[in-house]
Amino acid sequence: MKKTLLFVLMLTVIVQIFVPVYTIWEKYDVLRNGAKPLITHDQQRRLMKLMEAIVESSEKNEVICFE
Image (cartoon, rainbow, N blue to C red):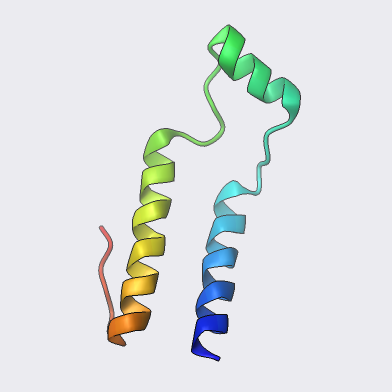
């Protein structure tokens, strides 16, 4: 039950951040024409820190600050 809840929470966070899904043309524009990506590297790193904090919080059963 606890792992299922953790998975749902992580999935919800990922969906909220990555909802603006790239189309093939947007990827092409970023790679070939230097357009700004919809999701920056800083945003990806922040998401990874958040997901790690969620897992750590679940394992320790306490509140974990991720920033």
